[in-house]
Image (cartoon, rainbow, N blue to C red):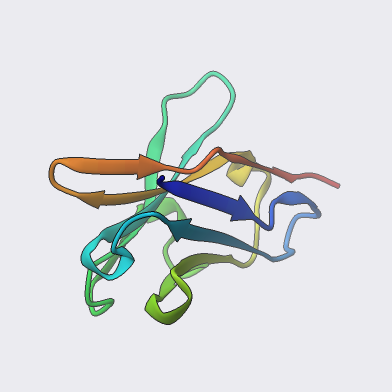
Length: 116
């Protein structure tokens, strides 16, 4: 049974940091590309960060470049999103996703609120 369990969300002040984690089970983790999406209230879900199967390739939406870092630990079946210098506009529900055509698996979603 496939499971993706997210952790690390919450409330943080502007300028603060959070690290999101997503731990997977039920599939061969190392064969999947991984990503983080987010959905803000009233907006469509958007891709925030992507990391390739080998971990050598990453990509970010422009609004988070230089502030967010995606990484993966194949030994722990876990990937991370380190979020620094958080802004109120980063407030959203964050989702992890594992992808290998034709499969895609999603986490349950984590709320991140950036507010003073």
